[in-house]
Length: 309
Image 1 (tube, rainbow, N blue to C red):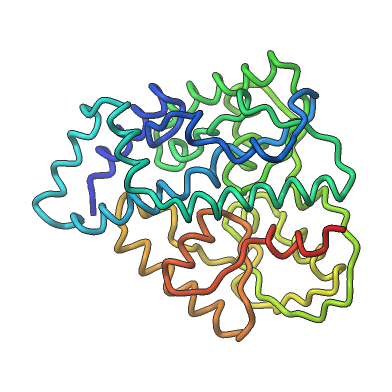
Image 2 (image 1 turned 90 degrees about the vertical axis):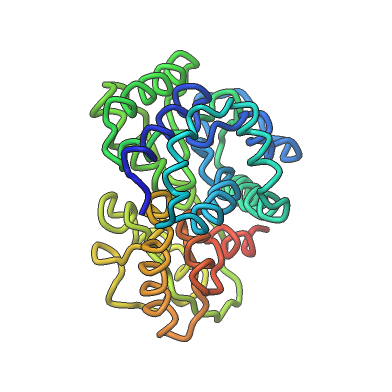
């Protein structure tokens, strides 16, 4: 296990200086929208929180953390703050997978198609789409989280944004629950699947849904994807560890202990695979971690986009 304090300090330093936990240049990080012909003006904003975009870099970084966990070299991670951010940005771009970037960008494009097919009016302005800061809160650095949250919330408010359409559970929890509590600024927040209005076909497929912790335990939104899929003719095979009783994918622990994250992930995969049905996730962190733990997993958007007319 790496020192939690060291990891927190590195992440907080990155967020302070670059507004994301990996110290990445935002222009290079967030390019999925360029071929989507999205409208950039309006008071309803598609807000990705950059989570899908960050996953390829999370995967690449975790591979290196795995090599050094519980070895003498693990102590050198404390020097991470001293590396110039442009060098960090270049290094992460080199070691991250182009295939992963393309894949996760495609999932965001799927979500745009789903919203358009559902006649949802929205804008996407890459200048306003920021990382929510939620990992800082999860790791206990409330002061750094609040500072960043105030920056993001004020930026959105000053731009006249009233409603946010979110695409992942971590960002949804941050802007819907934490921002009003800690910044005093509220937005109307809905996930893209709550707004989806798709027409069912002749589907007779069956899937097993993995409910992420935030949707299942804290936001009570786990029934939304299930009801949506059921209405489209996709049967959702129930498991005991779902909804408010869902099991964690292990992903949140990977920056502190990749070994622990893998252990938790494998337990969750065993629960999901016991149904014998294809597994569907609705969180980019869950998606990547369950895949890493040995499961074949599709993102919810990949299933829903099949019903776009």
